[in-house]
Length: 332
Image (cartoon, rainbow, N blue to C red; front, side, top):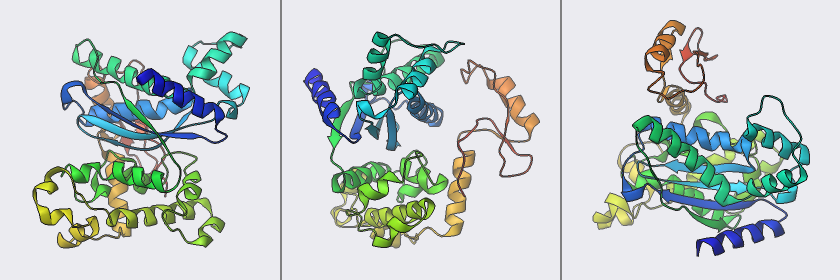
């Protein structure tokens, strides 16, 4: 069954002139709750790093305590230039001097980086190696992941809403914007999840009933409106699962109604946006003077399992404020 699914995926990709989108789901073996903040950040870092090594884009994600969901887009096999493939091949080789691969090496690598089983298996395996080293354990950590090819438009919007609502259904938060480990909150705080986020405007244009003039706006304003209308869709969602299914009245309550009942604003004002950015700036890292961060590194570097030498990073937003981890740019 699994091999047949992979064959279908590769065949569909080879015939597609556009990127192919997948919903990926996987759970920790035995349902163990091994994902704390440190583990979630490491897993997220590996997914982002994989985009530089392979041919995929991370369109959405949510990391829960014992499982994760993500939406990944893989480019057409012929969609990447030879120079770009070779560049990524050299990154994976970790050689000091870049070299030209043989035709056989090139073809094999080009097939791999467009194979959903390879790219997902790669960041999962790298996480397992890091986790086992850190915890002094051996063996597997994940079940075999499940992948589903997603149709563009309405289906993509539904899947993204389903993923975003995971922590709401689990009863962790009422508003998904308050859950740090999901693409929705990341986008609200930082503006983009991927450099090609603007492609989602065309993908979700009809299903979110975006205004026609949005296509003529600058990219930044397009994305602001896109996530505003996406939030309107979320507010119409009903958290039917998790703890809410125990109360029949909650089944018919939308997220917007629940927020109103709890006295929370459905619209995120500038203050809430600022607080969201601050949470992403400080979540799971040390922040303070350069000396303070260097002391943390000196005392905890081994526990963090860093292979390379790390230093305090100037945050560039607040004067003389440093962080333990270099974060991606936070967009204004």
